Image (cartoon, rainbow, N blue to C red; front, side):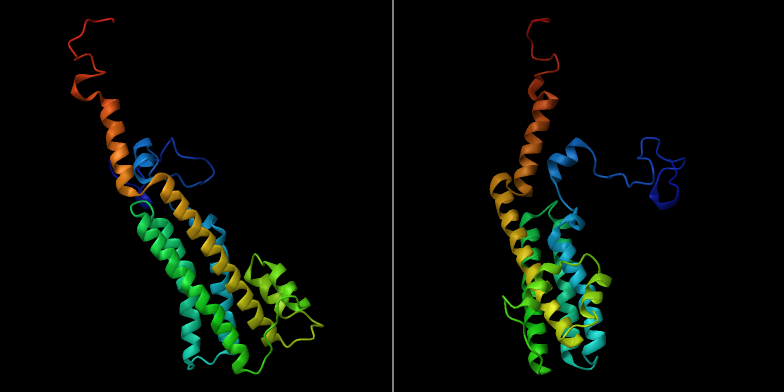
Length: 231
């Protein structure tokens, strides 16, 4: 059959979901057994916060860090590594739990480095690092912005006693710390999942064994066992 646009069969898929909802390609029972649950990284809180942090860091560096300064690339790349590795780890979990955990850990480390970079920026610029328990710090920690616009609006809020750059750097440090913590929680869950269900090799073995039983290997289950019919 000839394929239509975007690789879909010509004439459309009558069994597809309505309303333009994307249908899963790996939707068979066999795929579920072999690859297990994977991807879905956009639903991970660690990924969501890390991706927002990347957008925030790009804007922060464009506003407050000279592009020729080595800290510009360092901060942007650390932020990118954070969310990219969490997402790639989730994708790769289909065939390698080890790679999933390794990539998540790389992302975690990058987020930790980014938090330090924000703190260092405050020091270089002679700005104050807010301490836990202070009103400004607790407000930033409780903000949990869902969008870049929400974070920027908080930084630039009129009537704030702190300069915008100080507010931005402290919020960046807080977001980085939160993303780092969430990535550690994700690593903890991945470890528990691996301990409970094993990795790709174990899934392959279980899927093959289940397939042999279902197909009636050695003549069992398909009427070839030599026994009397109807028993």
